[in-house]
Amino acid sequence: MKALSIRQPWCHHILHDGKDVENRDWRTNYRGAVLIHASLSLEEDREFIREHQLPLGGIVGMVEIVDCVSASDSRWFHGKYGFVLRNARPIELIPCPGKLGFFDVPAHVAQMVEAHVHG
Image (cartoon, rainbow, N blue to C red; front, side):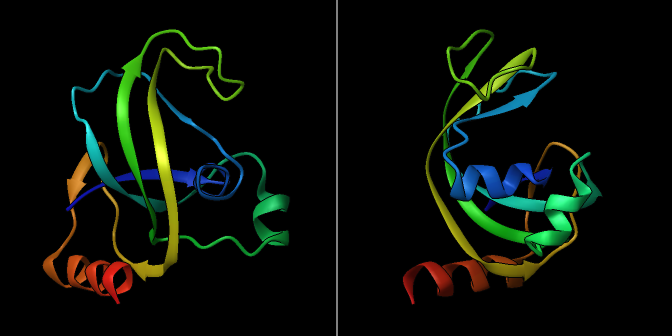
């Protein structure tokens, strides 16, 4: 299973607030399901993260990447490139170390995700 590490509160916005574009400085040809990994690194909105007790350091959801664009009408687009997202689904935190770019999660994490999704 592929995962993409994203800082909070952006994970939260993807999973709960309809954020439909993930901004990046690089393009991707990847299309399909990807796990959302909440990075241990924080974005600027630390108070929001603390106030809402947003999870860090693990898999927190799944989403489909359906396109990669360099322009978008989405209010969430502000990057050089945007990964267009659909069908976001939150899951309970599964601790897992993150990596830069897309990465494969360890087998035990993939099993826990499968159990959550199909159980």
